[in-house]
Image (cartoon, helix red, strand yellow):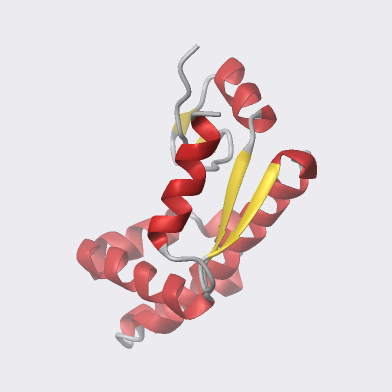
Length: 135
């Protein structure tokens, strides 16, 4: 069969649900874990969410309220109102990291390949993935 690369996701992405057979295959498949420094991740988050605009980001935060929690949602919205996008993104990354770490803890560690991006150039990461796919 043909291999495909997918980002590590939970079964539910917003209002969409990954079909169970595909999700089960994703959980059992070998995975590459890119360890990106917090500051770089914050910058990428800022770039992505600033492009949305405050209104859409505020609406997205309200949709996450149940999972994010009332206090963190309030803090994120206050940061957004004060144009402190950095703090807003920091709160969101804490939430995402918690979800991501839980998902990764459910995977077999024998099929995980950790690639620290601070030590490995992007070209090297791409080459490692391509070598794996073609071996």
